[in-house]
Image (cartoon, rainbow, N blue to C red):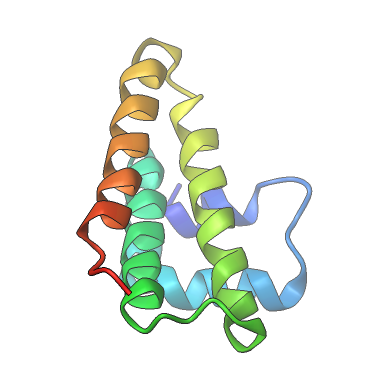
Length: 108
């Protein structure tokens, strides 16, 4: 199973536009083995969030991307939950990585 197939198997399915955006954002990572779903989803979320923060874009015109960041983080944690023995470490690492994005942002 690939990351793309893993994502398509999630229930409930996301709205059609969001699902399409997630596929675009994952790009080539969607062909990775499903065992890398956590890494693919989290790195995709981090990349998009970094882009949005650099552009200072949090308005309605980027709402789909903001939803995509949220969905990717949610899917990363869902994938991490499939390996309960590493869930705590992955959750801590994800929170640290996301927090660092905010710290790296230049002051407004």
